[in-house]
Amino acid sequence: MKEIKNYINGKFLAPVSGDYLDNIDPSRGKVYSKIPNSTKADIDLAVDAAENAFPAWSNMPKDERSAIMVKIADLIEARMDEFAHAESLDNGKPVSLANHVDIPRAVSNIKFFATAILHYAAESHYMEGVGINYTLRKPIGVVGCISPWNLPLYLFTWKIAPALAAGNCVIAKPSEITPMTAFMLSEVCAEAGLPAGVLNIVHGLGQNVGDAITRDPKIKAISFTGGTSTGATIAKIAAPMFKKLSLELGGKNPNIIFADCDFKKALSTTIRSSFANQGQICLCGSRIFVERPIYEKFRDAFVEKVSQSKVSYPEDPEAKLGALVSEPHLEKVLSYIALAKEEGGTVLTGGERVFLEGEYAGGYYLRPTIIEGLAFDCRTNQEEIFGPVVTITPFDTEEEVLMMANSTEYGLAATVWTENLSRAHRVADEIHSGIVWVNAWLVRDLRTPFGGVKNSGVGREGGFEALNFFTEPKNVFIAKG
Ligand code: TXE
Image 1 (cartoon, rainbow, N blue to C red):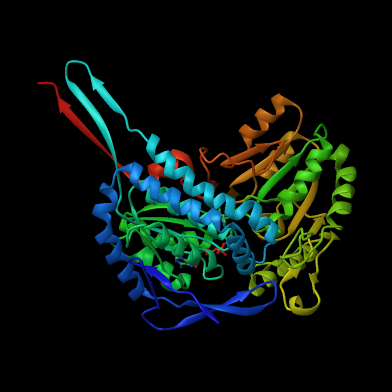
Image 2 (cartoon, rainbow, N blue to C red):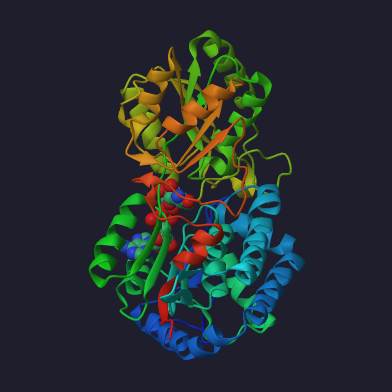
């Protein structure tokens, strides 16, 4: 049974404890590898390595840092299929999705920041007759990156790339549920000649390794993506230590469909925005609001199409949905379907576990589920489910749908479907979220600010926002003699 290792100071090390955790393949419900059950002792080793590597890495000319990062991206690209299969085996998602989304985006993340850093400029402010100010943007030092299981390498590199490009040294922790592609990334970094200690990947449980990263006084910034409650736990520890914090948390995104929408496009995109990655993307539109004149037509067409979506093992090229990431997560999602029924909802399609044949019989599969008839403010419509479950609700006025859309504690993303330009601008302006897509979903320009408001997080990732997070600005004034 494969035992992956931590990547510390350029070496592949067993955990100091010698203890390992089971890593389960969710498509079969079976243990298929082991990961280090690391502790603070491993983080201490990693922080020492990162501190020792920081002077040389931060003083390396940007174009040399950039070249090493591009080489890492190229080496991942050369092993695209291997990475995609590894991602799918760890997470349960269709291999086709990992091949088309997860791994290509990880490559793009690294290349984007490897080049963005070459164009990252700071300002100067001239004071007539007095002197000149200039701003230096220098790397922070040793930073921590903690990422979730839903888009493992995609979100892992989304944090690590800007941190490294800006000249920081990184202590990174992937989710213990999906560690494999992070381990493969460490192999690629070693092959690409990334200097020892610049990137350290430590595997293990959040409450051990993640917590040790948060508490270590030498780690000066934490970039976290995960659940809102975990984000709050991290913030409570990090805030009094005055660490910089970037928190990308949960969502309960509205998908608002007006009667004048491009019906065909709204329908096909809504199927994707509801169930891509088994609904385990924080940007998914889990609350669908349809203007009454087309509510029944849209609902019936949506149910018809979704009821035909194939739930299958990840290697199946026809799989539209694979397995959910773990048994506890499957149970959580099933509990919300039960709650929805208690709250008066009607399951129009799905709602039950799928049992495949043969080697996949033990996998964590669930039919895509559509529920109608719920109050906008019931728990099912207010709490994040993070699975292939959406609710559908009619509305009559713009004011009503905006009130319902903005009624949750989250504010990450939203989609709006209308051909009326004034309404598009007006509604996008009124929605409480960090991201709004009009007549589209998940169109991503890596230069744009990414993140949410309210309980969806603090700060923004992406573009120069990410480089600003991973640097400290210093203003220097030179008096005119
Ligand atoms: O989160 P968890 P999950 C959200 C998504 C969902 C959740 C799914 O909406 O709510 O993340 O990811 C580590 N101290 N987003 O279940 O449990 C843990 O080991 C330090 C939003 O994985 O919070 C893992 O590595 N670390 C996002 C990571 O935190 C701790 C996009 C996340 O785990 C810890 C993707 C602790 N006490 C998912 N406990 C967005 N907005 O972009 C756990 N961890």
